[in-house]
Length: 264
Image 1 (cartoon, helix red, strand yellow):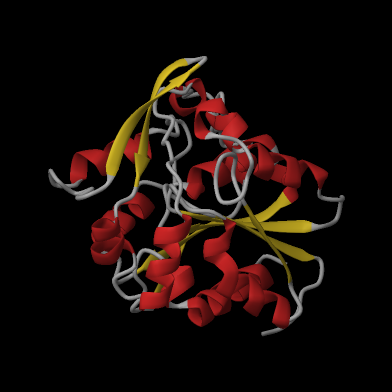
Image 2: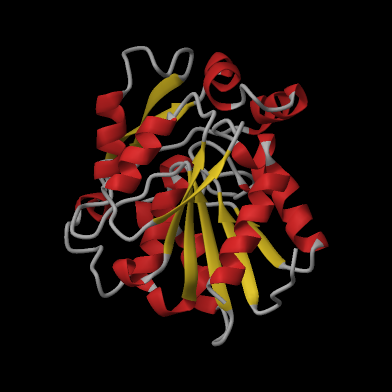
């Protein structure tokens, strides 16, 4: 791996997860001489907030938005979003397009210019079969903004659809560390069709990384998202389950460094 010291990788987890799930990738990137930061979104990982205290998707994304805003001029960021984390990255791209060298969507929700961000989740929910979430626990949170749906991913779902190609130890770690998460589907930012424009979000280089052995967001579903987003480039990781950073960390690191060097 070549070093590109002006590049800074910022990696974002998906639903119910936290910065912890990136531990293998962050260690490898840093060992190769790169700057790498894994962030907890609000009420995720070890972030102190409770989910019912998070007022909006923007507030949920605040740790990422603040990190991007604080990046010094000349530091080119490579933002990497996994699963739901693709939407946190999309929001940061829309707010700070000039600070992002490239955005990487790893088996992630990748919205498209001119559509509302929530459409990628809506299309996913329409595609999956009944009972997809298996033993996951759904709940309704009482928030100051009104009731909000939340989800805690169940151990059977994790084992069969997310971590099915990952080491058993990492599955057990996830069971210990997961927190309830929300997709914020009723949030105004998720419904805003004017948010993602050619001038902001569309001006940033986008790369979709397909996890080819994903049992959650299947390869066909991932390719359909790419087909709906003209201009997005594609990389693939063979044998990667949905948690590609856990099941194929070396291969993912190689892809991330390749992307960073390409958009130097």
